[in-house]
Image 1 (spheres, rainbow, N blue to C red):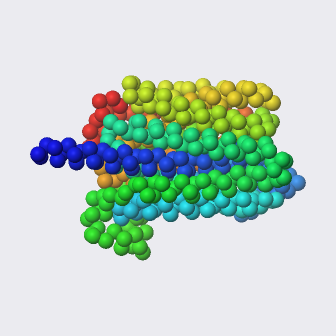
Image 2 (image 1 turned 60 degrees about the vertical axis):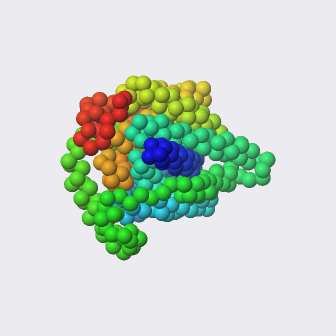
Image 3 (image 1 turned 180 degrees about the horizontal axis):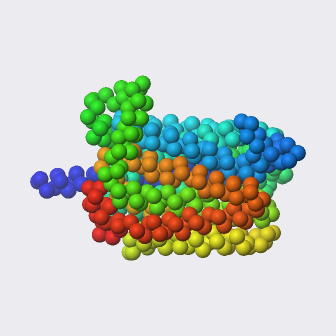
Length: 461
């Protein structure tokens, strides 16, 4: 009798875990259209045009009195948004672990970001300052919400499941991005038949990403459940009290404690350093690819959308394929292989001939095959290096490496363009992130890092 009850309980927990995993996938489905439609495809070229419309005779705009070449404004704004994320994300993670309320915090940031994205419909004429402000709010909110989303991974998946669950999440996200881009492409190419201008079509595409984000966030908010961590339980029976006026101060204090605590796990920090470097390059390629294609290669917006759509479709395949490789060879080796491919691919981008879409499509295909897998496996690998009960805090530091420190790549990209006037020089400068990241990751003893964090080491990692 006791055995039957135990087996029933185990089956019920497995069913509940699968239900949460399915809900968890849908936040990737919800938010990925922001990074695809807004950051990767439309906002870079469109905001650059808006900045050029506001520029002086020398081609400069002057946000806060600082002279900025209009062509570099988008890159600098991305850098500003992720620098602000450095302050917001660890605070959000610390408060979430302190109060045990990851889900409402995730929802709050998600809907703030969705509202700012929908507000991009009003970005017209020479309103480059409005565009910059909305981008900053949306990007910071996106980053903070993803911190809390990622922190659920170690709670909803057993150690042996995490590579597969993380890869499926990324695949969901890229599938959503592809579906939205199909609709975007139809609207953009058919704007004349629909009686709207090209600029209006772009603004509708931007706003639609915000609406999509808002609607599908409902699914994870309904299916995921909060689990009070050790600190939330120790704080007393009313975590809602901590979420009030005292949570902010407690969050900052806990953040300082987290920084001290992480020094106890030098191998986890070593992985974060490697991830900080190579993912900075990935994020910069994502955000600046359309600017490079339009400004340096002279490709039409329709061509760029089609290329990014190709990336989205192949990223689904790539995420699942690299997940299978990780199950056989381990996540660390698979990520190292993807970084070698990134190095070659970005280096090849320097030599692409202008005005020839076929070569840009080839580059997009190569990026798509390694993009989703390298990110998904990095996330699942890090989940093994996090001490239990500190998921949101540690993932806030991880997400700082994901979004927060990706100001380095855009800053280098923008400075290189500002100094040389060449987007080719700017794109090839990113190779250093992948090469250095490869070396740093190869030096991390992952099994020892998992053991040092007090977690069970999977058979293959």
